[in-house]
Image (tube, rainbow, N blue to C red):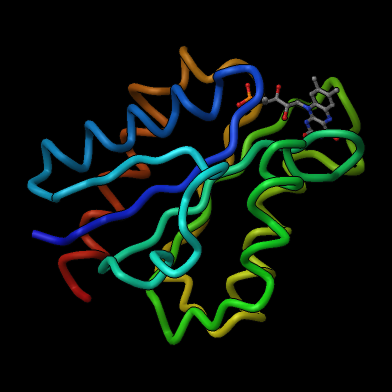
Length: 152
Ligand SMILES: Cc1cc2nc3c(=O)[nH]c(=O)nc-3n(C[C@H](O)[C@H](O)[C@H](O)COP(=O)(O)O)c2cc1C
């Protein structure tokens, strides 16, 4: 059983839906999961779990979700992730800007890599409305992630 911390930004609710599904799924697989919005999440708690899941959708031509960008992102720039095990969840939609499709996942991956964190699993990339993708794409990702967590 691992302690897992999810921190997410969500403007329209899609990322929130995906994170709630991930939390439930990992819970069923036997883990202790905390799922928090980013706005008031204390940055010093980024390194207190066995696994940190950072989740954010893409907005405005390859940028991060506005609340995440304004209220969380600046606070975590000086954080040393100290080899913290991490995974990333990015959302986007092909209809907005093909050049920056799900760019948030790449931004978060770079953040983890440049702040001394350890990506233990490929990122989950969700394109378009997440509801039809939960029981296949997201569930499958959770199952593979669970295997990686067990090997930590
Ligand atoms: C104003 C706006 C700009 C967006 N820009 C992008 C983008 O550049 N690339 C992308 O892949 N998706 C883009 N999206 C799609 C969102 O990332 C997608 O709808 C996501 O599911 C929203 O997540 P949320 O409901 O958690 O806020 C954009 C959406 C909006 C409303």
